Each structure stands twice: as C-alpha cells, then as structure tokens.
Image 1: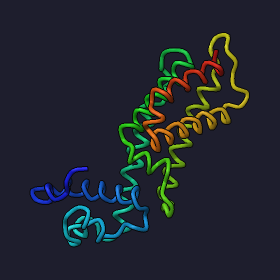
Image 2: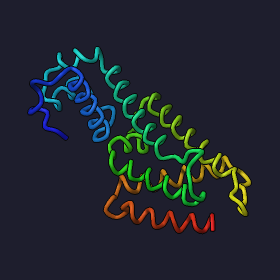
Image 3: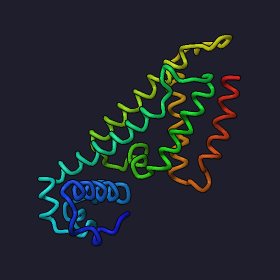
Image 4: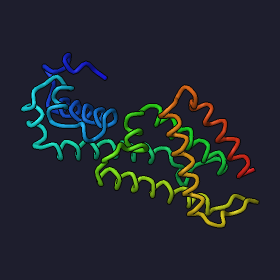
Length: 202
C-alpha cells in the first residue's frame, strides 16, 4: 500500500476518493467492519477527518461506496473469465482455462477477493447481496455449459446442481489460495483441477 503521508498533498479529488476507499477496504479486511470509523480512516490515510467528510458525508456512504466498487471489480473479473458462447475448445478445456483465469484474478487482487469470498463478521446486507448476485450469475453460466453435451458426450442430469458444485469447487480453491498461497499456489490448484476435470469429462 502506498505511503499515505507521501500522497497527502497534491492529490486530486478523484485520487483522494480512491485512496479513502482503499484505506476503508484494507481496514475492513484487517480488522472487520466494527473497526472502521471516519477517524480511523483519516488516521490511516494521514489526513484530518474534515477531508474525509469532504468526500463522504457519513460513514455509511463511505462503506457503501467501497463495497460497490469492490463488488463491481469482482463481478467484472468474473465476466472476463467465464467461457462465452463462442469459446473454442472442448468443455474440459474451457472449464480449465476459466478456472486458471479466475485463480489468477484472485491472486492479482487478493484484498478484493478476500472481501468477496471471506467477508468479515458484521458484513452489511449490500455486500452479501452483491456476492450472491455474482455467485448466481456464475452458476447460471456453468449450468448452461453443463446442459450442452459435446459430440459423443453426456449432458448433466441436473445442470443447475452441476453449476453449483463447480462454483463451490472454484470458490474453495480461491479461499485456499487466499489463506495460504505458499502451500496452495495456482499451479498446484490447477494440477488438481485438471485431474478432476479429466475424471468428470474424459
């Protein structure tokens, strides 16, 4: 994280707003929602409370803006990695590529994904609603993929359930990466994913 004291001067309004959202997000991930206040955000950012109030009228607005930004980032990354209708390759290849892209996204934005996949106690309803929205979108895409068989293949007898189980497996892998990246790097997670897909889609 950038040194807030080094950037407290000559910062544009847009850059300051982003800094405050970053600081708020980091405090939530590190200490939970209960530890966030206008004072704690100002202190972490190296500024005074009036500066924070100049961008956000109250704490609820600051938290809502942070949650909206982080959930939008996560949903955008998901939209980029999910196989589209014109994706080439076999179903197994599509799912493997999507899984690796998802894990790489988590690896590149661990704070955002920690908030999405491992929300702290006291998380507001807005966060839970956006997480559920993203999960349902992923499940719908995976269910659609599972419902269309390749030549000589077999359709899932329950595409929705298949989508939910694949989504749960990808979330579990991402959580392992977030909690212990040294023990569960992307390479190890992908080696197992490829083995598992080979068993399901020989």
